Length: 268
Ligand SMILES: NC(=O)c1ccc[n+]([C@@H]2O[C@H](COP(=O)([O-])OP(=O)(O)OC[C@H]3O[C@@H](n4cnc5c(N)ncnc54)[C@H](O)[C@@H]3O)[C@@H](O)[C@H]2O)c1
Image (cartoon, rainbow, N blue to C red; front, side):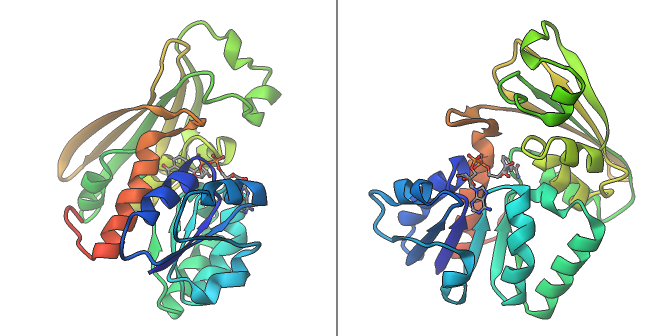
């Protein structure tokens, strides 16, 4: 298998290191908006080749992994799936727009390209997926983050909220998943994953809490439906090189690649 990693930051660089050790992965094309980041990632890897653009090696790739930004995902998704190349998407919020999402899924279907969305920083996606085979009444996600994870969020800056000056647990957002992924494009990709699995972007409720005393990124998923009720709480260790990203999200990309390579679907 030949893979292309688009975005060699916190997730992409660690995925590249893991992929280098998977015997079935024969080539790893590395692409980043900042070429020096891709070059740094390639150091010490046996199978890595740095490229300048997605187009350059798309025909030679079996799987593209998007681990960049929502904007990057929107730029490449249609191109990749239209060529019949599989894609793994980490910036899941890029699929919030229904019209765009439909185009991506239809093009993928037409060209037999697979779209893979890892569970990311969240646990409970398996239960929600099963529950969705029958009626679901409600899906709620409560995300709690510390100030480092929520720094530079334009919505908060515009509202005059200084995350470093908040001294107690505070709800800073409550609304739909659709609003949440637009307002926090780098923080609540799991809200998009949950929406795609369950009730959609309008009916999924999201609450974002800022807790100055917390060291983890926590996601609490609450689902009610004909199956019963489910509450799943994940306390994630943030990546040292990007506190917005949880280590479990990186691991979910690595685990997804290993499943794809082996073709074994346990807990599917
Ligand atoms: N699904 C999940 O649960 C989950 C969890 C954490 C992060 N994420 C998302 O995954 C993505 C990657 O996360 P990360 O922590 O590795 O981010 P990061 O900021 O550490 O790395 C992103 C990299 O992408 C590069 N990049 C930006 N625009 C690009 C473009 N147009 N083309 C190529 N490269 C580009 C940047 O230079 C950077 O090196 C982000 O969108 C993040 O929000 C998803």
